[in-house]
Length: 398
Image: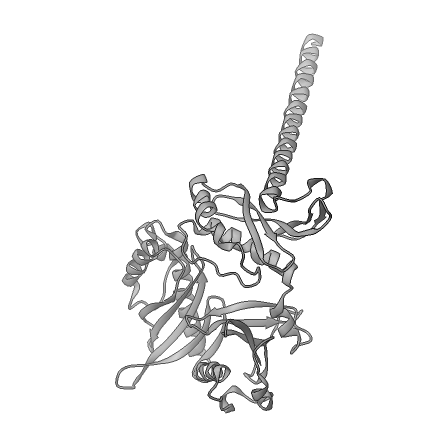
């Protein structure tokens, strides 16, 4: 009995020591990985700012989901070269660590992928062919490439740049909304337009997460313009740094339906908004932005068009869903998509089998023969069509 106890004690000690050894090795490995990544970042600092003085780095930890650290970069003479933002964002296979170098005038100096879990070949495509295009652009006015062949890796870069932009240039959109709504707390994209001037419809929320207004982002002479309404579509303001909006000051407090736009750049956008807002109805439902009455060639009312928006593989997919008066799917049309055509087009073709249906099951919609290897594109289309059926049922029940 004593021998058994002695053997058990010996095995316990061996097991404990082995466990501690494994934990110790794991911690040492973790520390080594972190140290190596930091050393790589130091090398990348020099790539961004060749004249940087590494002995005089001024670093600030930032407690955010995306941006972890800001480095103020100086040269040997103590002159400010610019700033480096270290951020992490989800790529295709895991997290990417991205460094964004910005000069004191808010121009991007260089963007570097410092560490990546993505497939090396795809990451290299972005590094070689697309990161150089970002240099010399203002960080708050970046013209991103729409098709790269490595969408998720590129989107992770964009995510970090956009987050860094808020530290450099502030958030002009929130400033615009706060100039109208004192209780504005956050905002979110509700719709993306397929239009040269109009870009996005924005929902503006208060601290209770209630929608308190809407904004429409447009571009006039390459300048951002924020056209703001309350929840009754009453015109509140147009905010822009460089565009003269004073001609419409007398229209503040007027419903969009009663505004008579002038024949100027802003007036053309207001006329487009007037047509949109007076001929459609907003929907407070995930994946559906609004609906229109649908007419045939003989001007007979045959149903409704539900405008949907959902994340696909490469970004937002905007799709019109046509449903007849009996609640059956008539047709669907892609308004805008950033998904790779070779993936989304076969998915769209496969969804044709559901035309004539008045409901859509997830199992059928996302079966292997429907998704054809493009699950995220298929899921976005399913979510929009399914939400359109739901919105139609709610509208019929009113």
